[in-house]
Image (tube, rainbow over all chains, first blue to last red):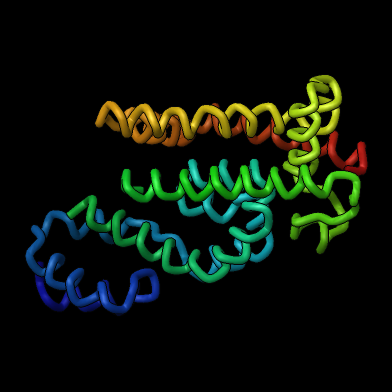
Length: 111
Length: 134
């Protein structure tokens, strides 16, 4: 893929990925086929800030985990009052990185 | 989620669950204290409120009382018994049937019809919790 396209994609979407993953993602995108560009353009990523807000409001019920697609953990959180309240607080600090990890996996799955 | 992470989380979760149950059992009757952040902030019970009390009722053999407090307690009791045994089976047999089941259950929950039906059940249970003023 052309470097110009890759850089434009990264500039527009860098908040969805972890800082240290961006360089390796750039390399992967450069090595990818041009036919992937249309998929990448239409991909919807989860916003880490939105997941943090959801975690602050509905973390006790696991809504943050459901939002990022972690169904199993969402159910576990829902059934245990957010892990007796402790997991809820821990997730306030972890959920943004978990969202970025999910976004990276999603992008890697189409490459 | 990787298999290793799931098994680690399950061990930690089960230990925390049994620990929590032991603490609640020892302090039963001292009442009033809740770990639920939702209840503390909004002064309303969450869908899982009453689960510990329900489990304690089950441990005393009061099945009807446990159901009336929160049917969620039955599910938690089942998971607390089943998950350690299942992980032990996987450890002994060297297979990963628990992880395979978890992946299948996650994929099934991605189906909108099943997910919406479960959400409706949870909401109904929540409304019941609010009516009971747990």
